[in-house]
Length: 476
Image (cartoon, rainbow, N blue to C red; front, side):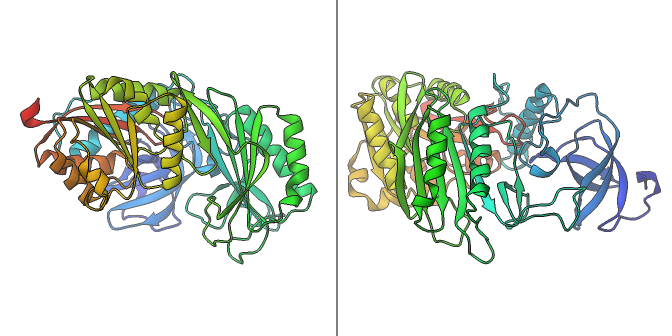
């Protein structure tokens, strides 16, 4: 069925020919049936596809591509065999220059639509120099409920998988043979662990029945240090069963410096363990950003694209415009990477973070790098400045850097920023939608948004990092 043949909005399950006009935020292609927008999975601008309607709502439809009718001039060959099913690298079939252009446009549109910023300066997006094998951390899930790909018989053996969640399904895992955005060593480790798990007859975890032993495999590979950590997450402490895997990994990969077994009995599909057992080496790895070295533990966060993170931090440094007389606050500081990176340009740096283990890592990172003008506070930024007496007594900030989770800033935190009135605010976000929402409030309360600088941290995915620079109106 072609668009011309559609008299009414098609029902779920209808197959229809669609021409793709643009990309939506999140990576789906955009087409139209009359006044109705259709979001099409695995489609890029310029393509004509045969698609099946998978969801019908009052204001939009969703569809998935069944067949390519006409190719786009912007298309490139896809490397990954899992592209159609995985949902991770949704742009891998789109020329990289076009990926960057789409992300830049999406940032502009988001700030205009959500924040009401019509004339803000958006500098050209900073692209990645390496667009494959750039991730320094990947997490895979064991399952006895393997996703059957198109063409496989319904009675195919599906009782083992080690891979990634199928989009929209908490209970189905796509078995991954090779992921092109993680390192080559990480792919070989993934393959070896999978083979040995089957050989040793270690049972994968059943997320519905809450039975089985093997839950997750997390691989961290230092982008600058080349050190590797392997974290095997199990449902109980039977770490002796993992010893053959440990022996084989350390024999094959001399750059593995850490193998840990995190143990969790929690039913939620999380990889953070309630108990950790060191199976080999030390319990951390190191990585570098610029001249600074950072200690990374199994549960601590570190920027997942090491080389691009260094370029991102250089932008943050430039936008912060620090002097040696300035006091800097670093909100959501994690393991202190931004605090440490900027410390030598400021008089004093204060970092604030909820997770106590991250604060402990931050203190150790500052010490090991010889940084003496940084102090860290543990607490929930929703109320930290109201409840932490020590934080209340420190000097007020001249400059503030905030790098919150995807959900953005809590209203209490926004009020604290307004109250503390830094002359300059650098807001770093992996979610331009919540960022635009927060900046609208800040700009209604004394701040002025002067610049946006998008940074592509994750090629082939719809994600984009965005650096916003604000000044206090009477302190320009």
